[in-house]
Amino acid sequence: MSDDRGVRFRDRERLARTRTHETALDCLAAGIEAALPERLVRDAVSVRDGSLRIEGGDGETGEYDLDAFDRIVLLGAGKASAEVAAALAAVLEGGGHGGHGVAEGVVVTEDPADRPSAAGLAVLPGDHPIPSERGAESARRVLDAAERAGPDDLVLAAITGGGSALLAAPADPLSVTDLRALTEGLLASGASIDEINAVRKHCSAVKGGQLARATAPATTATLAVSDVIGDPLDTIASGPTVPDPSTYADALAVLDRYDLDVPAAVREHLSTGADGDLPETPTAGDPAFDRTAAFVVGNARTALDAAASAAADRGYEPLVLSASVRGEAREAGTTHAAIAEECAARGSPVEPPAVLLSGGETTVTLADAADPGTGGPNAEFVASAGLALAAGPLGEEAGRGDPRVVVASVDTDGIDGPTDAAGAVADATTLDPDAARDALDRHDAYPLLDDAGALLRTGLTGTNVNDLRAIVVEKRD
Figure 1 (cartoon, one colour):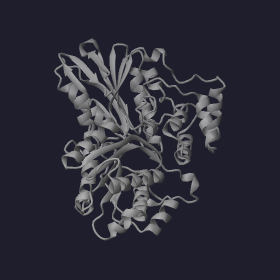
Figure 2 (cartoon, rainbow, N blue to C red):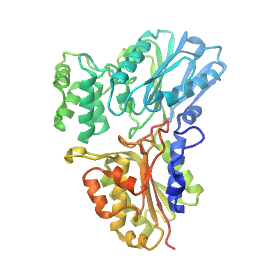
Figure 3 (cartoon, rainbow, N blue to C red):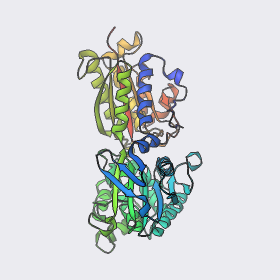
Figure 4 (cartoon, rainbow, N blue to C red):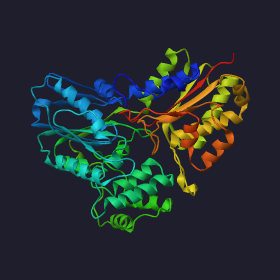
């Protein structure tokens, strides 16, 4: 678990066995720390002279005269929603705004007992990545609070990555069991996050702008921490408070594109909607959004910029390759290893000592494995990169002494896939090549890296801005 003082890797002394490994871990920690909600909210939100000001990362700003509202209602969902909500409550409490504290607050997150709270804020449980009955009950309480908001209330919505699964309110007549089966199939299919969310929105009573429909005609301001490439607000947690550009027909097309075997009730529901017999999720121009605004207060670039600064502080030249890496994790790992080799051999695209950084979201398609094992995208990325380094020109060199290249990758929320690890760190000597190939073929990278002592564990970090990777390249002696 992290707090505003820093992120801790368990067994760090052993993991940081060389200066190169230590630098990789320092860059990852700096990136995660910069994206902690307390810091994001502190930078983006202020109260002065009774006015609440919100500044988004894209330059958008909002001003709200707190004395003009009867109540402040705080709602949210996602892996970092409790932290964002608690930080917002602290800003409001410390702003000297005439007693307008949080009148009612409900957020849904993982492990609520370990999360911060505040006066008037209920932190309720949900489950990720597969929705649960308790998450559905928590989502209903969020909806109830949203519907109680009146025209003279201000609703602040803390929306962060992971909210799609955590805010599990199935559309009538679907059940949570239907959502569970649907989500399992979508996650295993290799579909992109926007494709997955197009389906989830149209099987939900709250996603795709429907929470804004419930809060209307209250004034609603959304603070989003993005875990999605490009920060599309309609995709972050399936966009519960913003317009939805997708349709029932889009959702059906995803099922067909990936030949998904889903519960009959799901396909029937989507088909009924595509035929025009169910109302679509609200789109731009819908009255539900007449008094709404949304602000992205943190994203992958937040973490990358901080990691780059940490590298520079340690005497390395930082280079951000991309904030938008996507595709199969093992293929991305091979590509990143090739760039590191080019950097080490020819000083291109940057002269070492250097740290190559990237963000984004890679995927693992399980449909190609008969009996998939345990792991996540970051584990597969590191295993693939380590294997590629061992097989390339740096492999033999690394065997003669300290490796010149170290690859580290984590999910910034602290959970890589359905595991207790955030990711892993490796060099050309970490893994047995034959064992690594077999593990990658079976999507079983977790035990491979665990046996090698290469897994990175932080516990839940309290933020979620997707994957962060640091590849440290030393100059030749």
